[in-house]
Length: 369
Image (cartoon, rainbow, N blue to C red):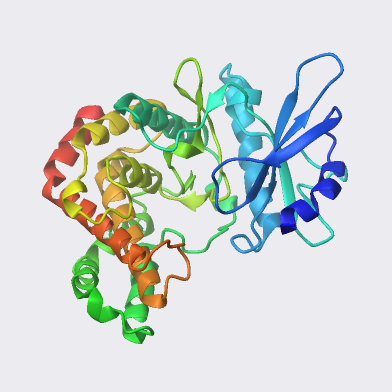
């Protein structure tokens, strides 16, 4: 029996779901936390569902800090949504506390568990099937920035220190190259040089933050399409989920990670780099929708730096794949030899595409202001 199932009965008894529990099964496609959907059956109405998660002890060493971040942000989001006439129960996650009143429940094996009500009549897409769908995610993440514009970002814990510190990512890559523990550096000299040639780029956004040009914001830090629940009827983004990496950061990073992930049509480990290209139409659709969602919450400098967000998040991700390849594929799971090196190469190709179209990216942003 898997560790999560071993404690499932104990954990279900630790929460008041408001009605008898009639089932709990594994749910979703996530690879970090153990996620279950809990079904309850009230006497006088249809089934109510909840999301139950055991937080990954490998990824998150301090569940207390993680949940303090999430509760603070979700409570604030709920208040802002109500203030603007929205449906708090549908548009923001809500943490259901266990019977002991704590932010989460700790089982007898020290596993940390949390519960959210299930947001019904929504769809979670894994890929953008159309520019309209990609744009809908942009509006949702832009709105996330707008609603949290006045939240004190410095009060949040860094659940993963230096997560988007591009200078630190480069330093770790250099250390992996110097160590060359598995004698793999000889196979990726072009990729190593590609990163080293862009060392100055790694400081652009961080220096702007240090100089006060870019403000510190509450950022999601994992702005993939599948972290937005879409309304089944309207196709619009309803609720932002997976708040484990909510931390202080730069708004341009959230924008950039979406572009890195969604503004191309190739697999992340595509071996034929001719198929890997930045789609300017998707970039324009997402940019316009993201800025629409922010409703002017970003500063002029943040808008100017949006292309840098796209480039730096892609460059940084490529560094992470390359570092992991050199260190023996210890962080990112692989299904075949060399997969992390192929992932790095796709990111390099996207960065090159961005550089080749830099003026066009700037013009698109300017036209979407």
